Image (cartoon, rainbow, N blue to C red; front, side, top):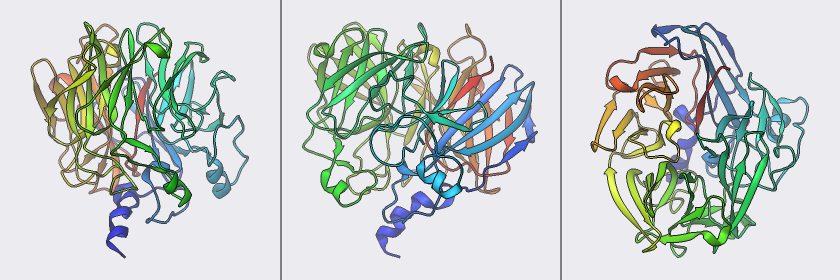
Length: 450
């Protein structure tokens, strides 16, 4: 095996390796006590190749989607199940009927990056061309969806719900487009508004942020690379040092001409903002920042440790000020979503080792007013993205639970930990033991029962 093979195979080994069995498990064992106010589903999704790919060419972002769900009710871990999202290759490998519904773009129509609930429907979602895939509440695939014919093209893996209205705000991209498309999905599950914002190339735009008045657009130096596509790359986006890095502020109910672009002095890449809010003319946005992306490792996000920064986007000076909040390697920032687009105090991330995503990780809580942080030590286990769940609709910002799927290497299986956000370094109030692994993946959400 060559040095390159060793490097790229990290995305297929250890807890990156796929699990192939779809399971249903009832009445899971629990250490501690599950809070009785947690009634619903903790959903998660990630790449899980249905057949063994070539490790030299496999890109972590392109594996078949597998969705995971843990059902909590009455202080019990009622059940866990996992299901493939039935893309073309999954149907070919496992059999059964082809997934119905419209298509956009080419390829497998894999949805593997996030799983959400909107307008009473569960969706597996992805970026760069694939459409949302409607799932049953039990995570079985129903159909690809263009929101009843109202979505004109690509969607995103990261819509943001305005807590005051309930609409989803999203920014989509596609390799053929020379624009980013801002999309608003109404509370009825139909797209009510799109705005095409021109950009000078075809950038990868994984996420966005919103404030009460504006949409925060990330135009970063990872762009579609035709040579990589012609050479068979499954994700043909590459670091482009000549492209520049900038943040756009689009007024939410205005047209594309309202966009003000603000330049960064140094190149970097951002997948995930924590949150953003208006601060007079400026916008404050907290982000996990990578030094580069897909410059030397074109099979996954492995170009140096991401750190946590606060950006002040100044539309008058058209610049972005940068302040390091924490240089502890960390990603997957999440906040209390009751404050999406509003001023926040707290945020939660998964930490990583200095040398790669496969090192044991913990969960960090930031107090962005006090300028402090706390780390919940998982004792050698590895956390995936944490999710904050408030105890009540009108509770304090950190009055709630932080929940995460974690990998236990001693059992080679997953736990779900439930932490008290206001007693963050204490032992979990509950640890739920799953009998199977949940491979390292991307995103998920808590969906409360009706």
